[in-house]
Length: 249
View 1 (spheres, rainbow, N blue to C red):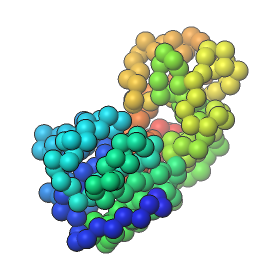
View 2 (view 1 turned 90 degrees about the vertical axis):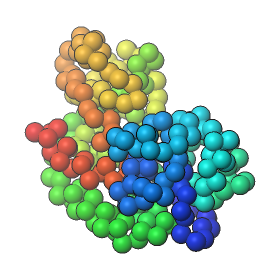
View 3 (view 1 turned 180 degrees about the horizontal axis):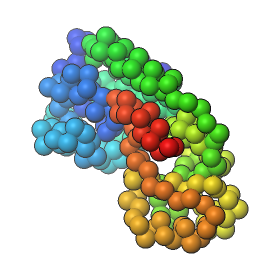
């Protein structure tokens, strides 16, 4: 988040390339200013019907964005491809976040609030989210593997926002590799997690997958979890503390 972006005056035509940041903009009161979103921007539920779809987070339609003539584009280092962002930055102000922890997310909310002329609204949101997480009671961590994909099996590793959320939710991520490594069955057995968490996104794990991992690791508890509440780093963070309490009860 060390990119310098000059926006003057307060932006009136914003394109968001990240679902969680699109939701944040709406919750900051910028529904009218938000003119373009991705096909994955599903919150609020009617957002895609009201806005121009500019592609996916990885497959951005540059011509569509150019036609919108935005005075601000908001993206994310992990979600969006560098080459496409660089191409857009030649013609428009582009602000990029880089989120690996709750602290990063709170800083991002504050910075976006300043950028779009909603500093007070952003500060209220930051305070509410911070208070919610501060109220979580720390419990002994359960050793876990958090899966995000199947065939190949992919897990969440270190140096990720989800890893930070897992720690705050009372889990110890036993996958020590960085980012999102592939795992085979033997490696999963070696890790011997107490809990296997099957995320609801990006891969839609079903009951048959749960049954498979229960057979593969009979001593591990296998559970479905809401991937949005572990990976979305905008205003959806307001709902995480209550979810975490329910998950650990």
